[in-house]
Length: 223
Image (cartoon, rainbow, N blue to C red; front, side):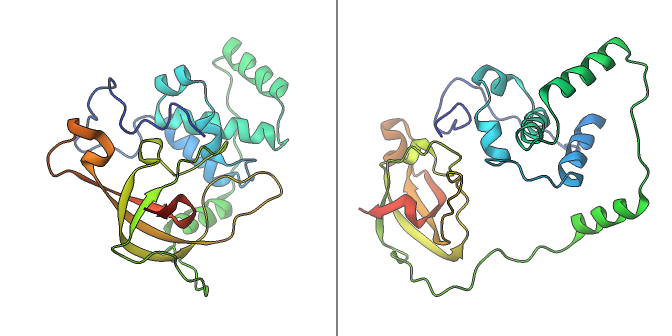
C-alpha cells in the first residue's frame, strides 16, 4: 500500500544518524517486545508489516522501531481473536492506576531453552528448487511496473515506472507481498535490478549514483 512508511526519495526528514556501538536494545521493554513476538506464535492476519504500514502517519513518524513492533503485535492479537480491545483497555487502566502492582510471570525453563535454540539455529536459504524459467536475464532492460497494491508490497513507490537493468538473477523465492484473504501467490523469479540515479531522481541525483533493488518478476516488464 502507499503510505508514510514508503519514504524513499522524500525530503525533509533529516539525516540518518548512525549510533556508534549501538546496543541491541536501548531499553529493557524493547527486549520484552521482541520476546513477545518470538514466544507468541500467533499468525497475524495480513502480516506484521502490513499492520505497521497501516498506522496513522503521525503515529508512524513519532514512534520508535519497537513501538511499531508493539503496535503491530497488539493489533495482530486482537485481529486473531486472542484478546479483545476491552481486555487490553482494562489491563492498561489497571496498571495506570496501580503502577506498583507486580506483572504476572510464568517460569518455564524448557520453553526458554527451546526458544533460545530456535534463535541460534542456522537458517537455511529460502531459495526454492522449482522448474520455473525466468523471463529476464542479466543485462536485460526492464521497467518497474506502476503498481499500487492495497496491502504490503516491497515495490518502492519511487521506482515505479522507472527503467533499469537486471544485474543478477537470484533464483526462485516465495512472493512476500500481502495477498487478499483466501488467495496465494506462486513463487517467482527474484532479481537484483540496477537503476541509474538520474533515472530515479532526475538532475538532482548525485553524480554516478546507482541503486540496486531486489525485485520479484511480477514487479517488472520489458523496457
